[in-house]
Length: 153
Ligand code: 4NP
Image 1 (spheres, rainbow, N blue to C red):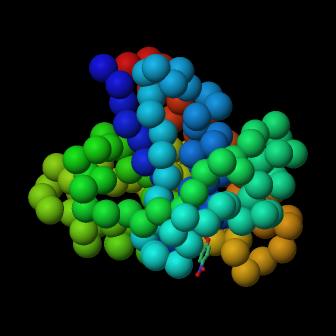
Image 2: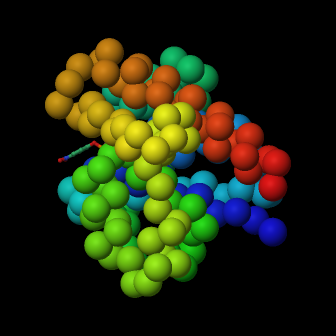
Image 3: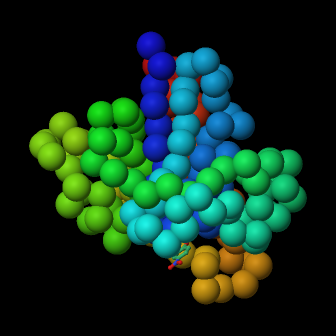
């Protein structure tokens, strides 16, 4: 059976498009479906931030075909795992959960690397280029762990 994984940040133009692109590059698309969304409605239908597109390209990934969309409560029906980038995203997504089963799907992505520490992927939107490379590396580490877990199952 296919596992459906959703990556969520605030704008769906910086962090979650990178997480989507990285995880997609490390899983079998016939077994794992990966998508991303933002809790906010600022960037619906927008392409990812040019700095995210550039850092992904630097590491060999093309994320320029992605488009922004807003997280909606129906996503709890469509996805098995919902990885959020920071504690604000966590609270926003949990506030849309309809039941305990929905809530159990929501995980902070860096808890894959630092279990139980509730570390945020920093929002690089206001910062410069180096922030995007740091974010890429954090997400790459997390996605490698997620990919290996999904391959085991
Ligand atoms: P993201 O970064 O959540 O990683 O996509 C942001 C992008 C845009 C905004 C906030 C965060 N914004 O307020 O427009």
